Length: 101
Image 1 (cartoon, rainbow, N blue to C red):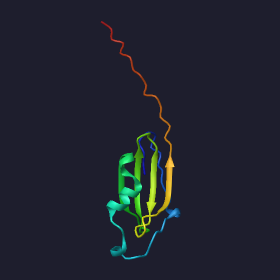
Image 2 (cartoon, rainbow, N blue to C red; image 1 turned 30 degrees about the vertical axis):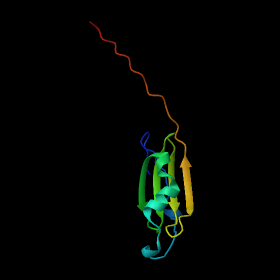
Image 3 (cartoon, one colour; image 1 turned 180 degrees about the vertical axis):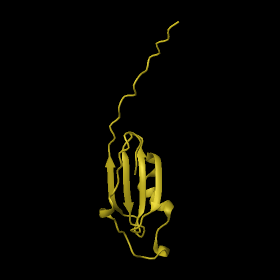
Image 4 (cartoon, rainbow, N blue to C red; image 1 turned 90 degrees about the vertical axis):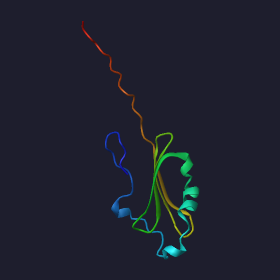
């Protein structure tokens, strides 16, 4: 996940590939059910996808600005991995206009 503000990237590296299941998709729980388990209403922005390792994967920004990456087993709805990174906020510089007449 790329987060604005310095161009810093967070997330699992390719070497940390998370594999959840080899079960057929017909055995998976619904996207709505796993979204409820994740708690999408607690976040200001949520991106959802199916990972290469057959996991339900969430990238989200919490209301406090922290960034979350979470993987859920699509057959059980159990959380497999959860990373939360606090983002340091910097003050917005204040610019004063010095107009000359």
